Length: 184
Image (cartoon, rainbow, N blue to C red; front, side):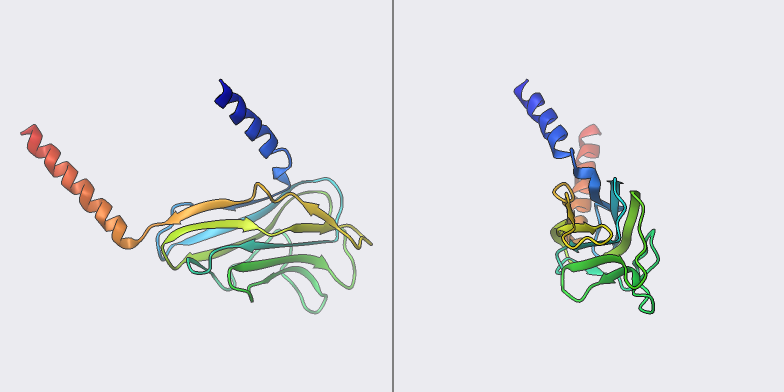
């Protein structure tokens, strides 16, 4: 009974503000050479805002950002108007996500948004964790900004080695052969 209560409390308190910003992965069991599509979502935003900053952290020895794979509910960054969604991958293991209106501040309405979607290519095998860096939303004429809860936006996946997949396949075939022999 104590375990059930602990689980319920963890689920309730662990998700109280988790819906503000989160990560969704389309492939949680990738192999080397597979792509993983990453969605960064903001939900339950209750106030209008003018800009958003965050970063997506990943293990660069296991994954590589796929160039030109970013898209969004927002238009991609336009240097002429200095506005839109800007995705920067200059640092290894970090996809910086910036959404803003520069010269002519536009107010983004309260609501739910797909901030960014992009692809990662699995380049090595091992265990990897994905998480969001501190996420900040700025309202019009706001200098300080409001930090969003990213604590529930961590996820961990394993990329199996191709040889271990082959070994598992041989083990299954061996098990089936032994089972067939026993049945005869």
